[in-house]
Image (cartoon, rainbow, N blue to C red; front, side, top):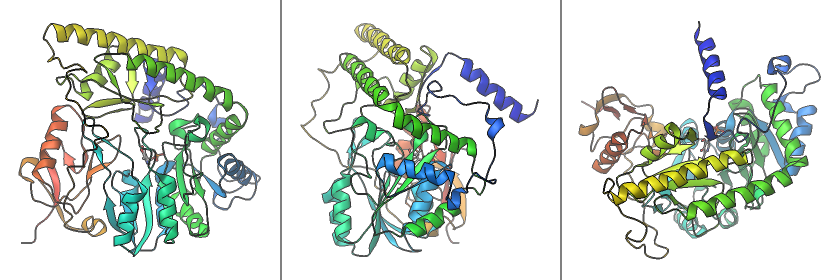
Length: 483
Ligand SMILES: Cc1ncc(COP(=O)(O)O)c(C=O)c1O
């Protein structure tokens, strides 16, 4: 049997298995269907338009998407938000520009910086240290950076985050626009917002907005949209870059899935989203009553569809919660971090799936209580937990020193050295957990002993570190030092 047969077989087996998906894609393998895709797997032939110069049937879909999202111009994408970020950043900036980048951006943003030789001025969001979740950024934070750096040519940030946290997109766009600067918002996790009465970035004035349809809506993996608005950007340049960063043979299966999704949004979604909100709110209410399982509920407006689940029991890590949910209850989470797991709900979830999660967490809560009473887990219930100062936001604590610009660092000679000996060296590759794909270190930054400790902590918890760390040799990529 060759490898493709093995992969195909494995996918079929997985799809027939018991695991319930609290992860993307948003259709959850249950609310959409298609005929055998081989029957209409084609690319640009007569009568089927050309994605890179849409004027016919694809143009109609793009206009429909623009109408639905109330955008001046929208393009279909088949290379995920990744392709959109690469095209958006390249289309809005010029080689070597200085750009404001909020540091919890996805790796695709860093790749765009590299490819265009951009000089980033990083803005670090504040951190909820208890969970390790970044808060959103405010207009004031962005204004401060723009005031100090009058040569910034674009503002690039993510909203909402993986965990559903918003930034003040409207305020940030106003502040940037007053200075003639465009805003690129990575809204990969927000294609559904408009239908959940949550604020979306097109409505709030962002110039370029990139959305993965596949993450939160019923559409196939890789499907995405890019919205272009306003007169600060050259839409023509972004269009040109979409041609650069997307395949010249776009899949009509994927574009048909976008078409199906748009049709569904137009015709059937209102009731589906109403029921979805009702079900998730009921689930959140139940989970909030648990004692040893905690559901994160931010004070500010957030995407309630993202369930960030943790436990105050200090002996239990995110990884243990994740494994237990998967192995004992057949619930596959979207993401694990050292302190929490993320269950991603979407309009594609069934009531049975949501109930399964509720019952599992309810049972786990009961077991944890029994264990805590027996002293097996060091008990620290919600009442005993140290009181948080109201509204206290702890500053991010792992801000690295930058020894060399990213675009320059990626082209240097590199070597691998033991992680434990790497303090003080300049890192040669990105260091990140995936998901969420937010780098802890980027090439050109200095490895601090605190980064080593953090990485060791992740590894001890069974998490995988991607990029420049090699787990076989326990070594990390660093820039070679001049002899
Ligand atoms: C914030 C963010 N931006 C962009 C991406 C890339 O999206 P895609 O997988 O659609 O290429 C991701 C992927 O997880 C993401 O989390």
